[in-house]
Amino acid sequence: MAEIRKRLVFHGRVQGVGFRYTAKHLAGSLGLTGWVRNEYDGTVQMEVQGREAMIHKMMEGLNRGTYISIDWIDQEEIPLVEESHFGVR
Image: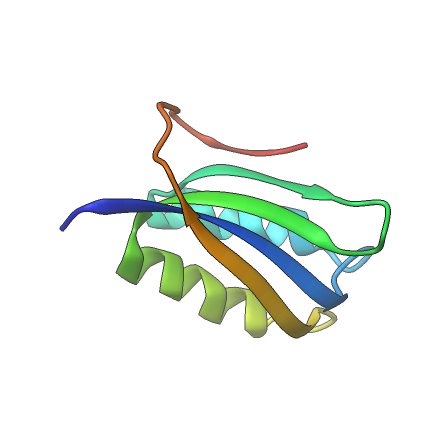
């Protein structure tokens, strides 16, 4: 299965609720790479790379977060990059 890379912007209650560290844990367990960071407007931006099925599993895991409440996600597919881990910025 081919890898893809997505840029995602999460809207809702996504800052101050463990979102970034939940994302980092999920990405590591699913073999995904990329990064996640808080934005000044209250959203969280993420770039994630890997198999599409694993990215989907990550999204399911984020939606199960106790305090995380995702209202909507803006997303686009972007070119792959060479990297070896998933980091919090």
